[in-house]
Image 1 (cartoon, rainbow, N blue to C red):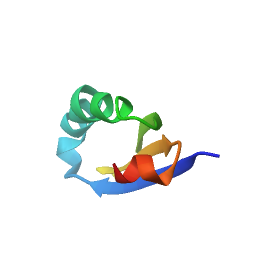
Image 2 (cartoon, helix red, strand yellow; image 1 turned 180 degrees about the vertical axis):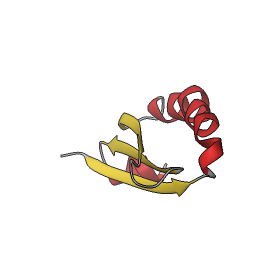
Image 3 (cartoon, rainbow, N blue to C red; image 1 turned 90 degrees about the horizontal axis):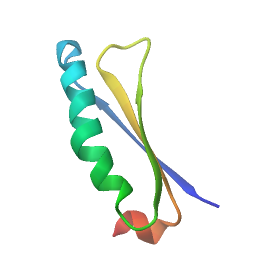
Image 4 (cartoon, rainbow, N blue to C red; image 1 turned 45 degrees about the vertical axis):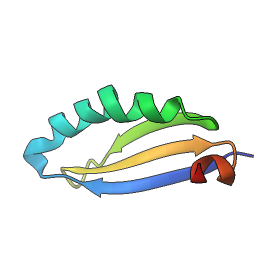
Length: 66
């Protein structure tokens, strides 16, 4: 059974495109290379501009800690 880790973050609404690009080009590639990281997604709030959730699935707690 995998573990889901969610991190909520907020950026100024006018910086949303930049934050998404940064996540896609820098953050996600680094995370998915980590041992135990099964998937990594960025979710954007429809109701709150600038609010995002980094949603990652991991194979175990030790992988998250490492």
